[in-house]
Length: 164
Ligand code: PNS
Image (cartoon, rainbow, N blue to C red; front, side):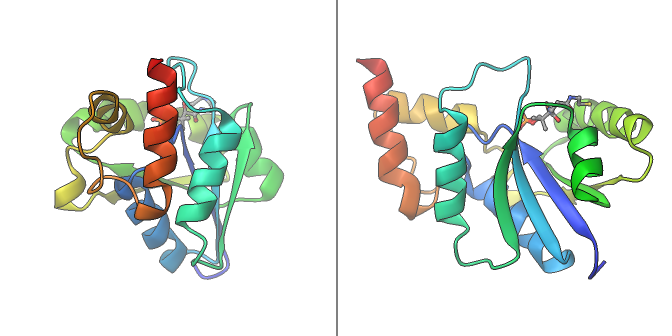
């Protein structure tokens, strides 16, 4: 897989240590990883795409083969545009599976040249989600175990501004 470009798509609203673990592991497996801040039409993001991109870039700055971008269209089309051979997704619990399986099959139908690769989350990140991070932060709780230190204050400041 050392010549394959992989895309790592998600809402990343905001990126968590769980996402970053998957991105780092993908970077060890593939020649190049493009993290794509994509549109999930069933979610209304709290952070702008630019904010999400900046946070991911800050958190992953030490990994040379990772780039971060945004795409407003179909992931299958983006993968085709950049010649990606793989879509990498993290799987937490069985509850993720049905939705992820459906997306993988749809993406395969839309772009037969791309394979979806699932990486199992680390046990300690099983329960972690961006919505949980936002809820804890909005109620003044400690999110320091869930997001990288480099973006911790940005998230807190932003969530608190949202509350005002
Ligand atoms: O982090 P999320 O919200 O679970 O990520 C879902 C995401 C953004 C990867 C998915 O909604 C997506 O791929 N959106 C792009 C539009 C698209 O291709 N939709 C069809 C997916 S089968």
